[in-house]
Amino acid sequence: MLRTGLIRFTLASGLLASGLALASCDQAADELPPASLPATSPAASSPISSAASLPPPSTGAAVLTPKQKEQEQTLAARYKQHAITVLGLVPASANSPSIVRVKQMEAPGLDTEPVYRDIFYQTYHLLEGQPFQIKDESGAVIAEADTVRPKEFQLAKINGLTGFFQKESSRHYSYIAPVSSPEPNALLKGFVKGNWGPEAAAAMLGVPDSYSNHYDIFFKQGVEVEQRQRVFSLLFRKRYAEPVIGSIGTSSKQEEIEAALGKPPFQDQGQDPVFGYKLESYYIFFAGAAAPYDIAVYPGSGWKGTEGGAAPGSGSNHDLAALLRSRAQAGGLEAMGTMDEMKLRWPDYDRLDNARGSYILSYVSSGIEADINYEEQAEPYIQVYGNYEGPLTESIRLPEDAAALAALPEPPYPYLLRLHQDLVFLQEQRRLAGERYIRERAAHSQAVSPDGAKIVIPNDNTSYDSRSFYVLHPAGEEPDREIHVGNFSSSFTWLNNRYLIFVESMYGITGYDTKLNKEFDVDVDTTPADLYKLEQVKDGKITYTKDNIKRELSYSFKANGDLVLN
Image 1 (cartoon, one colour):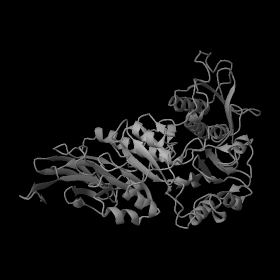
Image 2 (cartoon, helix red, strand yellow; image 1 turned 45 degrees about the vertical axis):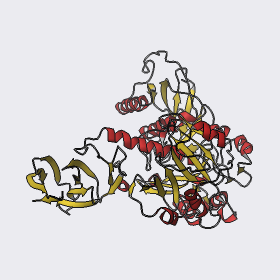
Image 3 (cartoon, one colour; image 1 turned 90 degrees about the vertical axis):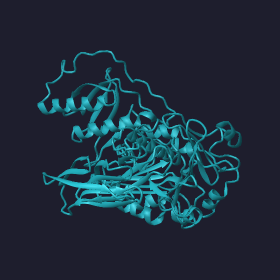
């Protein structure tokens, strides 16, 4: 079933802008930090028009109303964030949509898609859902958008082409076939034989030493494991001494790795250098500018799920295209019902985010990510990545029918094609960007222990899913630890090298014992209100306010180092 005319562009949570992300123009994260991934597109960008000066946009134009003038000024500020200059706003007339005149807007390409998406989203809302065009200095239409449904933003054409970015994605699609893997070590082989089941880590590694940033940390072994519905990824840190596959380990040089596996199909030489391979049963990535590397392993397309074949695209009962046809309604897909049916058929999803009006369901090793914004009553995006293998329509199946897909006049509805990206590789890029984000925040943290051995930063306190903070050990002598608390936390202050106190919103002043890995109360009130403010810790006294009333609490330490609060 083809959907003619229009394609929706919204801010998508977790896709990571400039490559990590349309990052949820939530940037995500998922989970996603506000850091950006390097662009992964092979397409280049160049200015679409020169920077030559023009007469002021008001010359010969109708006088703007105060509201329209405010819209023009706001558009100029929003576009400026992307180094685009707004020359003026021409209001809509009976026979013409609103026109935004610009200069220095980059030509559309895979690497500029996040910019186009953002400015369309901003323009759509500022113009209150009315049709509009964006024109360059010569008057050529760069892009035009229309609205078909209430509360939906839809993009009609880019440079005169419907589905421009999806066509670009199809044009740059190249199926990556898996290569043979050298013999994995006993640990990795155990995960593969155990079908990446959640019990595999406990059976082979025992009890983790700590947990941080989604990973169980087995510090003594130099191994970290992320578990979702199953084992999602396996990290061998630089200090891991044994080979991981064949004779290849964390200390192997890139030339040695390429001698065994060939030229890497995945490579990013940006802020977070990494290269990697798609092997028969898993993906393997080598993260770092040079050896020693952190080695990350993810289940590949060979993983079959708990239903013995239950992965989108595999088997008649698991035909994604058939599911979408069965769910289609006259006005489009019914969003929540479609997502619920996907969860029912394929329960081994890797990610489920249901917050802030958006709903994201990911099957990373299968190359599928479904995304809806139910507050906008929008239809779901079914995002299809380059590692997807299976039917898209009754007559098109990937990777066999890639040429037929690229020849379609419009992308098949309701897919959002991201075939130029591999979702597993994108996930590794997201992981590295997330680690960099934490490091950068730690470098500016004021909550450093007196001996400098520990740094505390709160998790990104923007959703109730991240009510935690990190205790980091930059020297690497102890494992990092993430502490989950009941509410958002702030005002982190060390009493000594062992004890930390902080304000927990909606609760009071609490503390954390880094030696015993245990939280404790200092002064709390279960009345749900932000009543506390930590003023100072000095000379054995904690000074704070409660209900704007100043209070003091004395503290001291026993001979064995235990804290005493008076």
